[in-house]
Image (cartoon, rainbow over all chains, first blue to last red):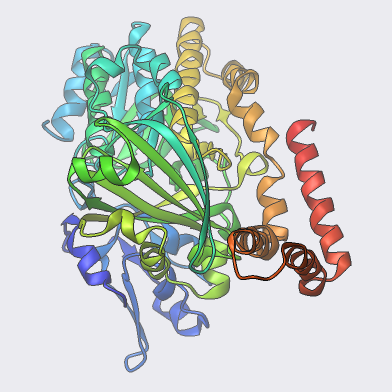
Length: 92
Length: 447
């Protein structure tokens, strides 16, 4: 996955205990492209073929909103993290 | 800055109005929201600006540069006290082939824009706005709008409900609030670009040397091709005081169509022979990503309703031909602010009253420029492999041919080059390219 981990390491986050991103797992199972796992610039989404579940590493979210728009079934529950949580860009 | 409930309660106490009500709430503390709020405060009206980040700028990303003249319209003396990086005195347009490049450069000492760091600049703007009377509330998400009989009457945050005569939506490209009012529909993949960016630290002297600028002067690179040959995407490179911002934007529809990971494209761009030496030995200090509105004029949402107006990226105000977004944000925010002040004077917050905002926008460069380029994205997308793939490569091949010294007679080389157009492509396709270009030029210059 390129050096994505190193890239994300440079980003300051305040993680919440709950995810601000809520996929509908039933829709993820029928989704053919799993496009969110490719397009997300932070690699938040991973498809686990064994458990047939979409894993959401919401702590890495850069809050761009791409996933919401590309979601094949348009089922992704997307909102901003709470005001005190999420990414904080020092450069932007 | 204390957050949340205390701030908002203070806001309403200062106003001494009935509980939880103010004149204007602005959702979003970016360039659009701050410009709107400060315009209203300057007219002596009460305005509350709500920002979801820890401070204004902490959740904002751009290339990028702010433009001098429009910024002066909001903060006339910003050049004296704002945290600015470098004054851009050179624009370079780079057409990258697979591993070669043709670069055109325009240099002018006068400049016309400055690179800034959003976490510093937006924060500075917000501080100025506070000094002028804007009530700033940070670390608070506006989750919903409060609607009564189709009129926007206030906002619901994570904490409580707050009421206002007018709510201005300056909540960025994703604007969930604009969608709630019905002013905007769902965003489509072809109308939005995803941008990924790295800020790479370099000593100022190295930046000066590599970009041939003096201290405090900067250079902007607009990059076509390279890893984006044949794709609807562009790269950028900006110089900051002691770092370089490098990134690219590509429409979501392209990423989806080709199954591309945006950071893979960024890595390839960084490795290109034209780009790599510019960032050599730099230290990556931040990675970021953001969406950019690309839909242009045809995708502008409804801009006002009863008790509500939309400005900045939330209104899809980005001129992607010229990389202008911050100026459209600032000026549209200002025009929304002016409209709000007049509406308050009349105590009339109906859609009819706020329609003045649209009139002001249409008289300004904002709608005029977006209309000028209304066919740009459609035309390029229809022939993207040609306009952003084949022709940039051909321009590079031309210079490769022209600069080669290999004992082959020149005329022979010219004839071979011209012939290659007709062997590469069908004549009908060449005509279609030409016709498409003429139509686009016509739509930009005439109508």
